[in-house]
Amino acid sequence: MTGRIQVMIVDDSASARAALKRLLAADDDIEVFATAGDPFEAAEAMRSQLPDVLILDLALPRMDGLTFLRRIMAQHPMPVVVCSGFTASGSANAMRALESGAAEVIAKPQLATKEDWAEAEVRLCDAVRAAASTGGRRRAQRPAPRAMSPGPKLTADVILPPRPPNPDVGPPGGHIIAIGASTGGTEALTKLLTKLPAALPPIVIVQHMPEHFTRTFAQRLDGLCELQVLEAQTGDRPAPGTVLIAPGNHHMLLRRSGPGYKVDIVKGAYVSRHRPSVDVLFRSVAQAAGKKAFGLIMTGMGDDGARGLLEMRQAGAETLVQDEATSVVFGMPKEALAMGGADRARPLGKLPLDIQTWASQLAPRGAISWG
Image 1: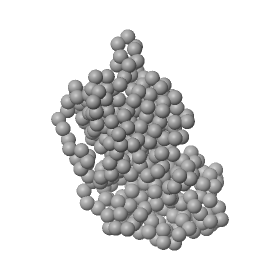
Image 2 (image 1 turned 90 degrees about the vertical axis):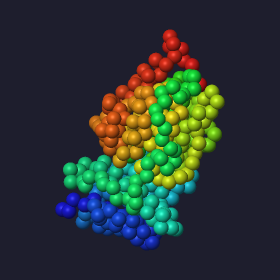
Image 3 (image 1 turned 60 degrees about the vertical axis):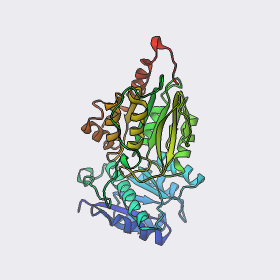
Image 4 (image 1 turned 45 degrees about the vertical axis):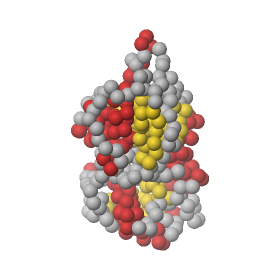
């Protein structure tokens, strides 16, 4: 037993299998021990060895990937990274894959340039590591996350320059809630938002997701919540009772605009290994809203959002993280606590009340008036 994360790739394209294997070779702690062109080949290979992480395309011959995933979860539950293309229908299937037990969903990489390869290495290896950390089998032997991206890990400075904290920067009545999440976040956010009433300040969210998939996620939440949930677009104005989710593969920034706020959606470089980045959103909230904001980091791998949450706290915002017991991966919350971005970790089931308690203290005599 080597301790390396043992990976199986299931994709009907030989070139895709080869590319994914080459990308994973960038991480010495990951080993691809088998590949398969369809679920039947994969099932045969699993007779000899079960993977620590399965990388699964959803468009497969002989049996579709979603059906195969459900059979795996019924017979031999394991961490699965869905790596597929995301059209409208593909995004819907990816959402069903998460509901069926997949740990991560990433877009099949486009590898036209050297920069594409470098970014894809980071995203794929991080997804495998995050998925491996959710599995109970040989969990104690999992290698600790390490910096493996080519070149330095960029901070929010490349998108938005830092400023000294200013608690009083927000507009009158401009209270806002900012949330960041990654691995396990789709389920955690669903549990949180479905427990919140519509009578709340605006909510802005970064959930690490592929492009196009965030729209499907927002539409699903909109059908489940009292809150209105939308995938954000440049120029959207956060409004009471509304949730704006950053679109996949783009950063979201909060800006002061007249008596309220608007959001800007920008491309830019990966920040803290992600696009969208929680650090970018949180820094913009600290600069635009100051002490009128509430910041929350939920389940996720890595440290994205930890620095941004600290900046929010230094600007006077109320800050919290999800606790270890209810997090699928206690990476982002743990780093935020260690950095001083928050001093309290709360169970997922208590977070709706925490947010409502904060909101109830904003208006005199319980009046609800945000804008």
